[in-house]
Image (cartoon, rainbow, N blue to C red):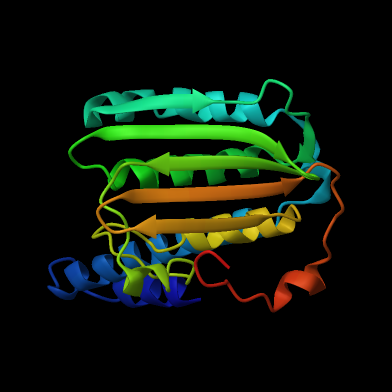
Length: 215
């Protein structure tokens, strides 16, 4: 409705009116908001029909392949320590690939001068564990407390949705996302997913609050 209203206002202006510039700016920003909302809608509500038997190790390899050029240009060495006995899980492969890609790119951003990215997988009890560790600058305590807040970001061009959406996707899979970090040492992100999938109802997630780091 807002975009249509601006369009109608613009139609009534003379072609050389200086207001066109500001109306175009407003339209561009509204379009950006619409894209953000679309991303939130798509990421927050994967349908159960998207959940299929999924190979986590294969997803990790695919994610690192997608990131290969970025890693190379950033001077980052990627190391994998994957459990070959990790069984497949029932999940939305596209959603988990987005989570892994987001965590890998965040780790890369934390190593502006290069470093080592280590991705591990393992079976821990009744869960599949994926760890993404970097040797980067770490996260200050005051930032750690807000990492999962929607729209909170320390990046100039970030939307502040990556970790919030990732947390919610993992929660919809019945899992957890935890982050541990020491400034100057690096960060470890841990994704835990149940080996036996049990769908969670929307009501369970409707009022969720993102936990503090390491909770």
